[in-house]
Image (cartoon, rainbow, N blue to C red; front, side):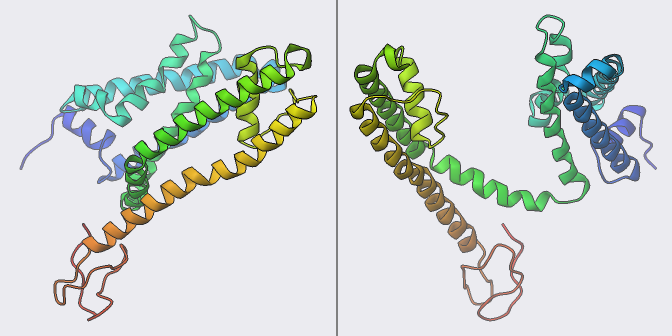
Length: 272
């Protein structure tokens, strides 16, 4: 019978979810993360912060020290500490504690602790929901496949808002609030995205005409990235369906969650 040393036992509890202790550890960790986020949110409320500032400060540091110890423990018991430190969760775990220490040099940076909420994604491991992450991977691959088209699109939009901003600066000028070309570009961006804060508005008839054109153009532009991503997503889903082929009749095109062939009813192989 093989006995586990202290480091291996820590590894099973901290990184594993097969044991009850590992599951309880992750559940307690997630509750601690949620509580720390609640403390951070409450500290941003002036009334609450003024009355309970000392308590919130102490609680924030209790959680920070707790997560610091947890991070060191993960490095200690990990078979490959450097690999863990470079992994997605390793980087997030480190970022989750750094803002509190950086706040000594840069006050206010502690609000970056909101990134701790990303650590709640560990609940997928606890609840055995990792298989559902496959759907998010399809979306991610679709975005990666469309990245060049999206880059071209945003480059075109950047040129467009620069030209529109420069034109409106020439038409309206500083007297009407368009004090510089960057300010005018800001106006073009919020207008073309249909946000339209209204803090800067054209006053001349020619400026209003250009503004109307920009607004109408904005509605057209919004459909472009949606169409690009939708097309890539559709292609990626089709590829996934084609990978699921029946071994009995060689029929493909099944849904990714199908268990039986839609043509002959034979049991499908394990999903790729």
